Image 1 (cartoon, rainbow, N blue to C red):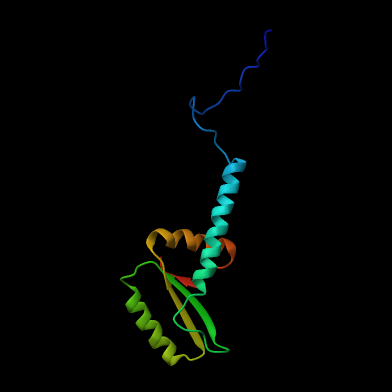
Image 2 (cartoon, helix red, strand yellow; image 1 turned 30 degrees about the horizontal axis):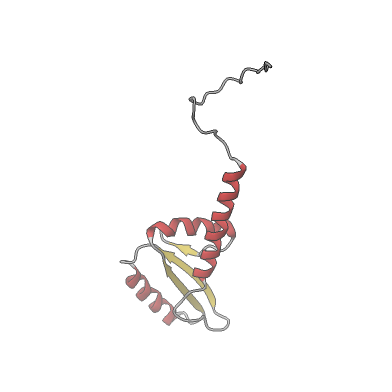
Length: 117
């Protein structure tokens, strides 16, 4: 039995190259990763050394450099000592996690109010 085969349309991809574009599998994998990152972001944003006083304006600040954390913490403590109606929650994340969680947090609407670049 013979089969008639139609020629494939021309392609600019090299032979054997994976198909370009967004496949269903890649979409679902990306969505799952984003959801996991957003969940981690929400969990991290609730971490802090103490709770905000009732009625205080809360600001979440994220940074990635552990070496800068002591200086930022001291500056924030001094700021809050003079501004009792503002509570700043500082979160330090490692470099590899920082950008992933920052992006996922913004996409999920749970990102920080301020962050270090």
